[in-house]
Length: 363
Image (cartoon, rainbow, N blue to C red; front, side, top):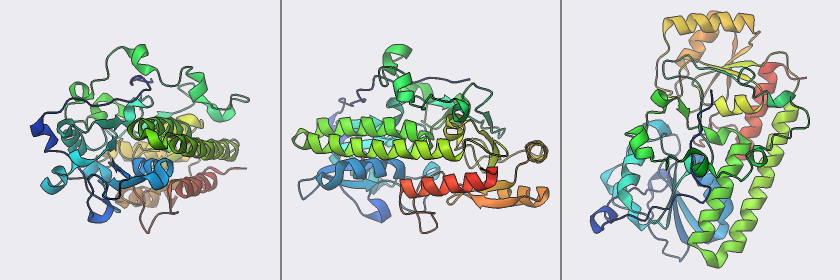
């Protein structure tokens, strides 16, 4: 069942800040450098983790100075914010984050008072995939989302949804994440999956929203931001086409991965995601779940158990050994390291497609 949540596409702008709150916040550069108001006159943008950093860099171009809170090799779910980082955030011109993914960031953002604060969850809709109990059982076809087999649909969900993200009027709940989610990391309890960037169509929605907020924050360069956003969404449209074509005909539709990060991707292309853990990579699977996965692997002709670049591969390898399956890498793109199968989002997504084609027996 899909759970829609969101707001008006017009980005949430945080305008409530006291002098005390402005002294708090979060800001650090990738790899440990810091930023807070660009010394060279560029727009200072802080992104909470890599997928949002990539958007800011691609859309902002030479007009922005982008820093990220989550350094290379750091698992975003586990990020801790230091007091020094917290004290720098209020100097950012724009803050991009995704509530529900990183509890330490959520808490700091709520105190920061940065004028142009954008929650990426407001730029699209979040849905339910997997479970914190580790059932990780997400079937795109069962939910009526067999996009790979719907000829002529084109998968343009932005168009299907009509007005381009006017979710606030649809839901009418004001999207108060703080009240809904407590510490910002109970997506396991609520069932809402934050991994929207792994669906190229939803990621394009985020790109549109980031482009809009940069235009508002720096109107002198609005035309460049608009042009860059359009160029990026064009690349994402081609990526979506590659996935639809590449995964249209396969021997099996089921894949097994470490944690339920690929629910949106599975739903988009009519695949079945079976995860060892739930949406939180730190959750431990039960013996019953491991036994269930062995049965699923046999019934669905699964060939590969995927592990990730930033999370432990221990349970994936155990399952592969028990079932006689291969192992491979399917990257949730929560960060880029020297182990990544590419230098940026687009390259890693292409590598993920190749890995899925091999594992699923694409024809």
